[in-house]
Length: 119
Image 1 (spheres, rainbow, N blue to C red):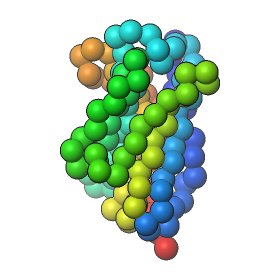
Image 2: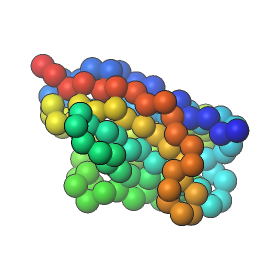
Image 3: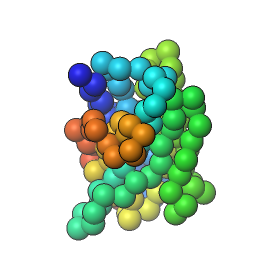
């Protein structure tokens, strides 16, 4: 059973960098055929896919996030991370990490971590 757990600060100030970590257990992030994603849900909005990192370390981002987002991994810790720069109150959301098989439909999710951007 794969489990994912998000961690990171729940509060950020505008213009700061948001950093979140997803710790994976029950499966390796280097296993071929799987992708590891960050997804968020803002108040009153649907799910918004931010980006993903593949089993080989390649990254893909939604165009609207590309200029201020970085997804990386630490294979020794079986973790992957999200950095979102220059946050604004519009980045307030519940942030999830998830595993996607080749269908790109998540099959395992973390429980989510609430991030609030406020001065």
